[in-house]
Image (tube, rainbow, N blue to C red; front, side, top):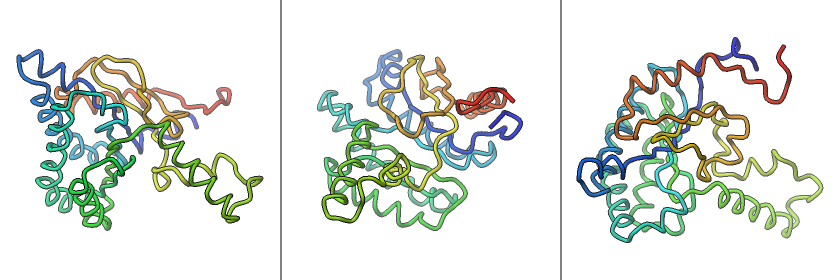
Length: 239
């Protein structure tokens, strides 16, 4: 697919990095930055329809983030609950379809209940598809999908000789979503941190220096505009 065929990324994924550093630069605790980052999520989601983005996936909490201090982890979980409770009405009315990906088994049951409720309440929406990666890791996702395949083979429901890349992809958390066209990471770090490893095989990447709480709608629009100049060949030679 060349650049003339597609000028706006349909699916954008964002690694929202830099909340802690943003807060520390202001002499505040790290959770202050996470609160500011949550407010920025609303702005970016609201910008998507005007900017032509149909699917937005955000990395909220990784399987590795449990290694952070108990204070920060506990504070983040409370923030997630508060955000879901406060934003549900707005998301429903704005036509946003919300999904969650990741392993829910380790999450507090009250948080999972809020996640389930929000998914149900927004299930008929189609303006923007917001996917939140919570307790998510790319390797963990592939491992869980492989376990599903193994169980199906063991139960005689799947012929092992028929397993191919598409067979595995249909068992990933993101099976109903298109692969991301563009992955953005904020805060100046140039690594992918175990995010959408399978899905981003042919994604374009943009690493920006801006810390997530400062990543405005205007900067988002500039990054999307830069996507227009890229030619995506998917392994082929230029036409």
